[in-house]
Amino acid sequence: MGTMVIFVMGLKMALKSLRDISKSDLTITDKVRFMDKVSVPFKKNECWEWNAFKNKKGYGQIMYRDLGNVAAHRFSYLLFVGDFEQKKIICRKCDNPSCVNPNHLFVGTHGDNMRDKIKKGRAKNPPLNLGVKHHLSKVNPDIGKEIRNLFLQGASQTYLATKFSLHISSMHNICRNKTWKNVK
Image 1 (cartoon, rainbow, N blue to C red):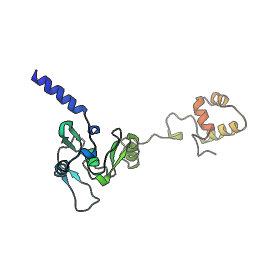
Image 2 (cartoon, rainbow, N blue to C red):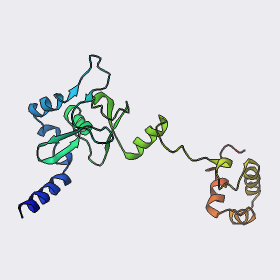
Image 3 (tube, rainbow, N blue to C red):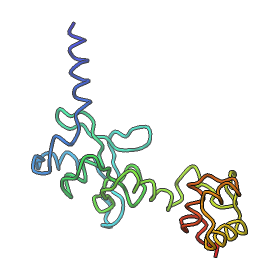
């Protein structure tokens, strides 16, 4: 029975997060304890390497009071920068999973993080091929030009969708310059 209570308590601790605390809750002791686990280089703009526990992907983890393990970079942002909306994520400019330098951290959405990842070439899957390179493409620049000309001459989108075997929403996007923008 004692094991069951410990398991349940452990489960409850795992469900908590940093959203239960704010920067004002942190103490000097918390900061000293955090900094004991960090290698700070002489140059201000270099990565601060997390030297304590890291998960399989290399992200630092710190035990904080009764919250259990919390992400070290999120804790660093809270400690040095301040409170942030907990639905947001803390992204890194440096792309180093074990970096906790607050100058390298910024608040963003999952989408922001994915765009940053693609921009820096770290995405495993390349962006989808667009236009004629897409494997399902039924339109090429000549067809796009013809569709636009017929539309400007008064042909309805429904007629054009039937004529070119396209979905009405695809036809709308071509006619309204939402797709095939480069075709004049």
